[in-house]
View 1 (tube, rainbow, N blue to C red):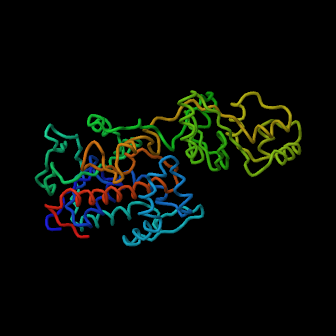
View 2: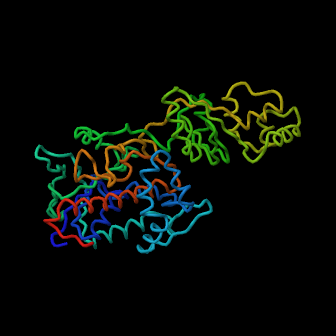
Amino acid sequence: MTHPFRVVVIGGGPAGLAAAESLSAAGCRVQVVEHMPSLGRKLLMAGRGGLNITHSESPEKFLSRYVEAASWLAPFLAAWTTEDIRQWMTGLGQESFIGSSGRIFPRAMKASPLLRVWLARLQAQGVTLHTRTRWTGWDAAGHLTFAQPQPDPARPTGDVLFSEPDAVILALGGASWPRLGSDGGWVSLLEQRGVALSALRPANCGFRVAWSDTVRERFAGTPLKPVALSFRGQTVRGELVVTESGLEGGALYALSASLREHLAQQGTAELLCDLRPDLSVEELTKRLSAVRPRESLSNKLRKALRLPPVAVALLREAGPVPTSTLALAARLKALPVQLTEPEPLARAISTAGGVAQAACDDRLMLRALPGVFVAGEMLDWEAPTGGYLLHACLATGRGAAEGALAWLRDTHPERYRMPL
């Protein structure tokens, strides 16, 4: 291009960095603005136990994970597929592999090597990175405004921030894990500009239970696996962790959207927990019957089924313990746990709600704010853990960048000559 487009990307997480990479590769002058002291903090946290970046399942099944948002996310996911992500990682010197569950990880497992080379590529492409700089909205003339710390003469910050860029990409995340940067502070800024939003809600979250003192004091932090959790026709196998305030864990996160909406309408939700998902009621009954009748309940469950003390505690929490062996076996296969509310949004893995689909055009540009595009978890979609969250952030980041480039070509043909 003869005169590079100037684009400000606000948010230094995966969606923002993906947008910056695409824009700078196309020849734009790009500035990334992040209010935290460093970039990609939530990405680094996600990679502490192994960076699950995407999933290898079929495109049809993969798309179904986004439920109501699948139809409008489909073009962005199709334009940046699982194989595209793996090739992108290879280009950064980070080979990937498919785990036994079908999830895809970098060979190094951690996020830090990937983030380090990614930021180096952005800087090599001319992207300017501004940290400790919070976007505060627009002034009366429509210029971007920022709050920055006092400059350190010994450490120049680089280019002066564009207050009148040609386009803006907003990629500020949701409101989960606010200490890592996603604090939802953008909500009021967009509401003031007439952007339609859905309320931010916890996704992939734990739920509260009115435990007895015994469970809170003795079993908080205790894992329970394998289990199968069921709610309203959905069943998910995985693990569960008892917390001081309730339950959390991968199996529960997969049901969190349905549980959250049910709780919002009904005020309580009954979760059914199968404590021995590999055994039938008949097999459980047979094993329990083989234990001497004089054994205590704890000993009977430990000897017959290898159930730990926490499982016995949950059985007692559910009410009077059945006296017949058959009824006890049935209870162990469908142990009811009464959930009272989701854990707060700040403790959730991800965020539901955000910028409504109707507020954006098919380029992810805000209808109320021409030239302003939105990507990542700010958008109103949710998905389970397993690589779907990060994949959609990367895909919509690139999609917003492509949308911005197309819009700039359409609106400024007399000022710029973009390559085809």
